[in-house]
Image (cartoon, rainbow, N blue to C red):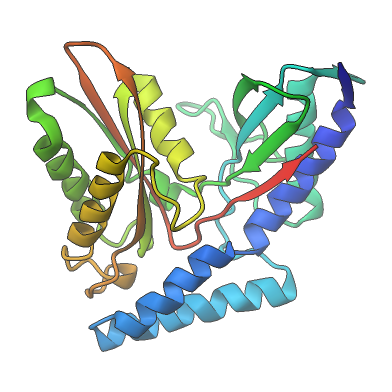
Length: 281
C-alpha cells in the first residue's frame, strides 16, 4: 500500500488549473496551424492566424488563453493500492482549484444556487469531479476547464436503436450546425454513445481529454470519427462561425454498453481553446 498525502493532490490540481488555462496543448496548436494552411476562406485564415497568435502570446506571458476560464472539470484515476493521508481527498481537490484560480489570476465563474441567487462562490469551487478506481499505486489527474460558450451548445438525444449510425451522424451534424459561432470554432467534438443518459454525457466530456489525433481503438468507431470530422468541415461554419472549411479540429468518440431498447448519444463541444493539463503522483 502506497501512502499519498492529499496536499500533493491539491498542489497538482492547482498547477494543472493554471497550466491548462495558459498553455494550449501542442497537438491542438499543430492542428490550428495545419488548418490555416488548408483553409479555403481568406477570412478564415485570418481568424486562425489570430487564434494561433493568441495561443502563442498566452504561452509566452503565462496568461489565460481566454477570459472565460470555465468551470473546473477534474478526472482522477486512483490506484487501488493508494491510501490517502492528511485529510479529505475531495476537499483537497477543491482546495487545489481555489488555489490555482486565485494565485493564477483566473476568472472565477462558479455561482451557487443557479436558479435564484446565483451568488459567485469566490474561488471557482466546487470542481466537477469524476473519479475512478484503477489498478496500481498511482494517482492520475486530468484538469479540463470548460467555458460556457461551448458548454451551452452541447446536446443529448435519447436515440432509438433503429436510428443507428445514420441517426448519430444526423444528430452530431445538427448540433454542430446549430451551434454556429457560439462555441468559438474550430471545435473539438466529443461524442458519448451508449450507457444511459448521464453516462453518455460523461463519455462525451471524457472523450475531450483525449490528445488531438488519438483515435478510438475500435476501427469502426475510428472510421466514424474520421467520417464525422470530414462532414463537420463541410458544414461551412468555419473559424469563429464566419464561414470556411475548418469547423472542427477533431472528433473523439467514447462508447459503453447500453440497454437493448436504447441508443443514448451526447455531444460536447470544446472551443478552439481546448484546455487540458495532467499530472501523475
